[in-house]
Image 1 (cartoon, one colour):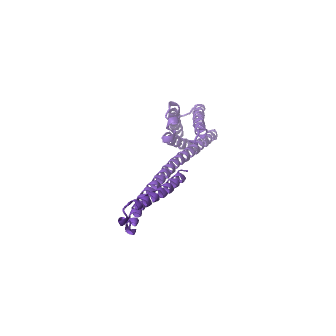
Image 2 (image 1 turned 60 degrees about the vertical axis):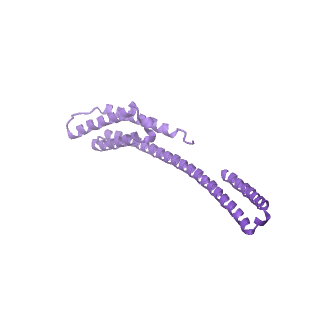
Image 3 (image 1 turned 90 degrees about the vertical axis):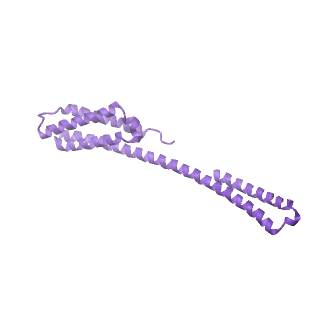
Length: 194
């Protein structure tokens, strides 16, 4: 739209300038109305017109560049959000696996998956786009509780503990799943078409 207006403006300036140059040429004394002076006047006008035209083109390129930059930033934000949602969905699947491994008494595998889950939770916590959702006490508590559960399960596996309250561990996993699901839904249903 802006380019169309710039073209019309350029045409008007060109026609107006040509008329002014022509009128100026006929207003100078007859002895100075030579072909060389005519070319000089018209050449000067074309040079000025060329500079104006170049300026308009640079402004168009600048506007297009700014719009492109904004579109890229919005796209990168959206890609980052989609990747974050994917990571959160992956975390929920890992929680289900951990619960299954605990039921099957495959504690070593459950411990490894709990460490994977903790890594994802910490990674999501430091995502700048998600900071407003993850910088709260509930999210931080889920990471702390998971860390305690990892330590307790590790102590059970290496023999430093005789038993572990798996009901409490499962409750913590469910709390983590609830927190993650809430965060995932906030990201999914937030308006992005700005």
